[in-house]
Length: 288
Ligand SMILES: NC(=O)c1ccc[n+]([C@@H]2O[C@H](COP(=O)([O-])OP(=O)(O)OC[C@H]3O[C@@H](n4cnc5c(N)ncnc54)[C@H](OP(=O)(O)O)[C@@H]3O)[C@@H](O)[C@H]2O)c1
Image 1 (cartoon, rainbow, N blue to C red):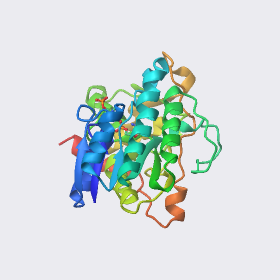
Image 2 (image 1 turned 60 degrees about the vertical axis):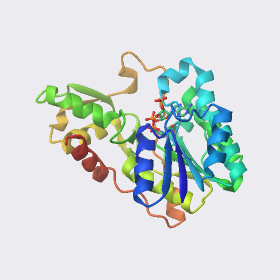
Image 3 (image 1 turned 45 degrees about the horizontal axis):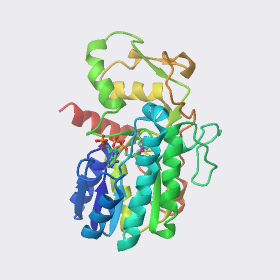
């Protein structure tokens, strides 16, 4: 399979490139500098020159709080760019696998979100990502939309990397870190997500898929697991509520971010593992 990966410099894009390369695909990874997805001419030029079998779009403006202050930039990168990519894919018959987010939901549901549940983003970032989904969905059966959550990888800034960096200086200090206990989700590791994106491209699957590692936790519980995996005392983290965050964050987060991987399960595709396994592997890699 010949693949074009947009946003290849990001934490997910990096691992999609390496995972597809390891699977024997012909992979072109384009980072932001190589291909600005908001530049329609550049996107059409790159895709029609390469004529890939599929494009996996990992490009996005992911600065959730900054998006609140610059909706124009958020919609350009997270929605209109998807229109250009979809248009280019259409010209060459390439399948599109587009990556989206749990933030399209408002987080008030009392059970895990299925692919067909009603969306209702609470932030500019979430709304711009939902608009991107709509752009991809306009391609009909030529596009898959993959919603994921709480993404962590070796090549990016994420909570695992941050906690590993801070923990040695805080060892022995009970409750030195404070994380919210009233937002729950599925931590997801790029090493596990990347091969699923490739598989969806290979199968030319369409429609919305929730793809996350399994095991729902609050941020507080997740950070305790990170500390445990790295051999630190989990009591180093204490639970707080979102209302205690000081200063409050500009963009509201969904309280319930748990994505049920209902389509994968119903389609008989394997679900990504419990998050504790790839977490242990990532901790080992980051400490090398
Ligand atoms: N991180 C999470 O917790 C999370 C959760 C749910 C869903 N997601 C989704 O997962 C996908 C991958 O996210 P990630 O965690 O890998 O984020 P990331 O590390 O921020 O990667 C996104 C990449 O897109 C690039 N990019 C931004 N604007 C671009 C443009 N106009 N053209 C081309 N590239 C552009 C960025 O480059 P620059 O930095 O150079 O601008 C960055 O390398 C995104 O769709 C995101 O919405 C992420």
